[in-house]
Amino acid sequence: MEILMSALTAAGGLAFFLFGMNMLGSSLEKVAGGKMQQALERMTSNVFKSLLLGILVTAAIQSSSATTVIVVGLVNARVLKLRNAIGVIMGANIGTTVTSLIVSLADPNRVETSNFLLNLFKPETFTPVIALVAIVILMTAKKSKTRLISEVMFGFAILFNGMLIMTDALKPISELPAFSQLFQTLSNPFIGLLAGTVITAIIQSSSASVAILQTAASTGMVPFSAAVPIILGQNIGTCVTSLLSSIGASKNARRAAMVHLYFNIIGTIIFFIGMYLIQWTVRFPFWDDAVSMSGISYFHITFNVVTTILLLPFTRVLEKLAVLTIRDKKQVADRDSDAPDVAVLDPRFLLSPPLALSHVKEVIEQMGVYAKKNFDNAISMFEKFDPACKEKIMGFEDAIDQMEDKLNRYLVELTNSELSEQDSQTITYYLKLILEFERIGDYSINVLELAERLHEQNASLSEQAKSELRALSDAVSEVIDLAVTVVKTDNLELAAHIEPLEETVDKMEDTLKFRHIERLKAGKCTVDGGIVFLELLTNLERISDHCSNVAVHLIGYHHHLVMFDRHEYLKELHASAEGEYSKLFQTYNEKYFSRI
Image 1 (cartoon, one colour):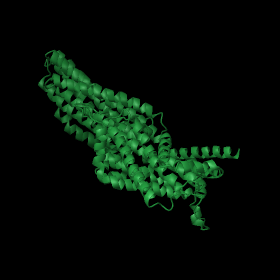
Image 2: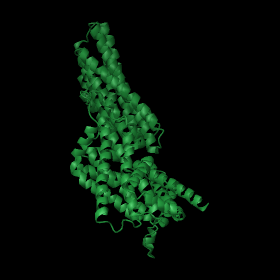
Image 3: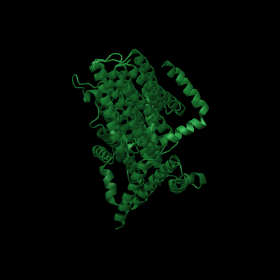
Image 4: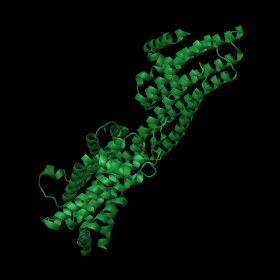
């Protein structure tokens, strides 16, 4: 009965440990926000930078599997090149060893001391202190980022609490003859290798499986001869996560997962042959001795560091090996397309909301760029209608519509994840931006259809109307460009330029409508051309309105306002910043209104 209760307690401790590790990793990802992804994108110019980055990121989020999955997603999204990803993958294998070092602090067989400071750093001492501080922060903090820090601390405390529970629960179990017989069986190199691979593949975390082995070692019943093949197998088993995440991805993404597998297989073969060759010839004096928790950690680190040093000069060989495994089909190789690559919305990133939102922002920015391009092309059709240009515009519009649909679906799916308050506000903000850029694209199609109508009716605008249109369209083109830029840069100061330019567009529209109606009355313009021109003015003014909305959404988002009254904002803008607003309005009037 006592053994059964100990087994149940150990299982509960394992559950606490796995939950704590998951909570710690996900909380650290949230604290990092999109910075982790930005670092992976920008700091991979050479293999040594990539290696260091992989170590740091994995040490921070406590999961090589998570880092590798992110890398596979970035390669799939064509953000990272396969060659640059290899260094990150190697670094991830070293970074994951930090967890085993932390876990070794819970070793019950370490030397006892009466020193107060040293005792303070024992897990059984600092774990409840960390939990206490975390609960105080959680109950008093109002800012979401501060509360995230308490989640990190909770994850850390739960992880160690689980380790201590498992360690205590395994003491009576370790006295059973079957327990020692189990590890004698695992001393068989092939059985131990297979066991380490299978267990790690099932729980999909080498950090967790190494920690489980360390817990078993705390009983003093695990010989070094059993620990070696199990650890080697664990490094192969951890590749399952990245391999599963690459299913259905691009060729290069699958190749990145294969690099991870080949790296660990080659390293395992080298160590397997080297260790057992020495043991069968020279013999290790400690081979049959019990291994400590720290000993497992040191061997785990040694394996990954030595394997990285040995294989670092052969990154191109690993790349070629992966390319040979995942071959290109003839004439169907991956290539860039004129259409946006919506595959950047990789479902792998849903596991990390900040990372997912960072990529959503990139696609929204691309939406804005395409909407601006379509507007400029559509306006040019009033000078000379070109059927080929029309097809190009419709192709971009179709891409914008697809992006809108996929972005909305992706963000809705993201709401099912565990989100911080900041992430929820960001999703709302992005949904608003998507609507605004999609509407700008739609109005650009309206402009194209008006140009096509004139072409089909064999009609044209008067030279005066064309001159006025050039001035107005230049102003609208600039306001779209400002809207796209402020979304890219989150520049609040630049956002304040949009409204005075939008008001200039409104003033120009009113003036041009009045003039054109007078021309129609005087018979200086055809009826067909006159109606088209009036409709065109309305569409251009509405495009500038949507650009103004983009600025309003940005300002509301940065002030953490869920509902932001546009009219109230304009009143305050005129009242509180009248001097600056008037200067900008005057500048845009001189630049555009003076031309008409």
